Length: 176
Image (cartoon, rainbow, N blue to C red; front, side):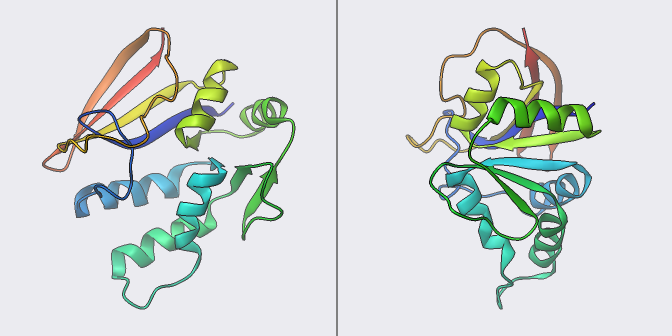
């Protein structure tokens, strides 16, 4: 049975705005390794549209970026959207039956399925489907954006802290 994990980079003041800060090379390599190991990812429409950047090779990419793109392209993806008509390669559109789809994925797959996007993660948490939260805390305060938690969340229990590179701390929590 797979574990559903909500994991994102976060500023010290609680925001996940991907345009305001980015991972250093060590953290980027960590995420490349992470993408290789997960069983798949569930995206909301907005986060999927951001991540589609990795579908098309860019001439200015370095080796690390090409490596990440290759890992991301191989990974199965499920995209939750009522407004998209189609999704890209190795992706499945989920426009209805979110709870049943995620329960089925958790039952059929082994390992970790990551969910990306605060709103989608909040909806799945409300259904009792998020098993773990991983906050990659970066030493920046950006003053606004999308918060990591889209809605109030009941008590969480800290189960691990890990330093990733020189400046990022990963905080791992489980529900209550």
